[in-house]
Image (spheres, rainbow, N blue to C red):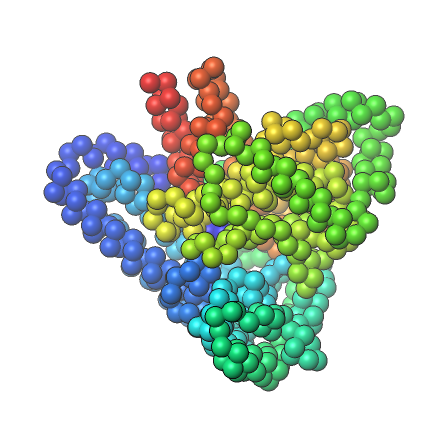
Length: 591
């Protein structure tokens, strides 16, 4: 998902444009719109060329056999390209644009400014986290790319032939980071090498890279299919597996010995400024890490009080700590098999499907499916995630569920989890955005605070849709909300206040019913991906604030279906833009 941008100058540029718009003559406005749309289209084509695999995933025929360039030189060149695009935008007076293009102009400007500022920080050297890396960029492609005809398979084989170079180039970028001290902390990366070695197979036929060749498309000639499969097998055996072996050696011999001993990014040179930037960027606000930390503590206290009420309603005879221990250890709450967890996730998702028309007037046309998280990343990654569908509708969205370490994944949390990742959460919001009449950069790139804020807000809609009917599932929902509130505290604690990994783990264990495995995995995620976890609660609080305002202002005329459509109707936007939009919508509803 696209990194979020800040809101202050965005709101300012929109305000200036709105004041002066009435003075623009129609001919001038038309000319300005044409100029702007040319820049906007040129930027989108450039973006697709920079991200060729993503372009293919969207159904765009751009550089179909490329993988992108993870080198520092390419990164720096891209920053210069963004500066050039920004210069072209600044040559256009936004006051002369149409209403729609004023918003497009402001959003694109802020996206470019944010990405240019990112280039000031050495985060560009950190290409690995506890859940990502250049090899995993490659192993994920069989699930993302289309495989409908001979051209698709030929494009894929061409990409296979470039993977060794991609991994080698990424290694050099990471090596440069090592020289500057920009590495991940040791404890959070423990076991990371397993994500590499699992793909170093003895037989190419067992490689994930050969998975697309499991079935031949009906329209493809058998001889051509067999030819491309043989080429792919040879590339995997002679190029990709040796490249993975070299990457494993690099990781063990160079990266691991150079890992950081201190957990927070604020401990490295320039790290405090970098983290302050990430906090602004991911939340689309000007909030400081300290302000976010205090907001988190306030939310933790509020949710803790709600939890106590649920425990009382459950007539549990014990302390809060004993209640948490009961939830974490009693076998009745845990699935016995991966299939059991998948079946329950499917049941919840299908039940919510039937409730969607009660909450929304507009539903997306793209369906979603359910898959298990691949085993090569499952044990080190989160308990579930969502993968968007193809922009051209040729591949559904998917809700991925973790089926490892089942004794750490309680069923009482699964309702909140499913509503977040599938519907009415990520799938509904993202699939709907993809079909809106907006420029592609708005349909296919996202502001994290909006997207994740909506996902967390969607969990709360379960109350209105017939979920959380037992004290356990209700506590599961509150525990998930507490999880996101704790993120505000521990992410800022680690990176801005010098907290240790263990301090963060202890804080989350004391305040949520998450299993210790999930807590540890999540804390390692926050450590290796600074700032991203701040988006969820920040966005959710803004959406709930705007809903309360709409309910108060509209009274009996408030329609939850129309409110939700209004929130989602502009796609993912910075929170300041969302606030302005909903306030305007409220006035329109009054009239």
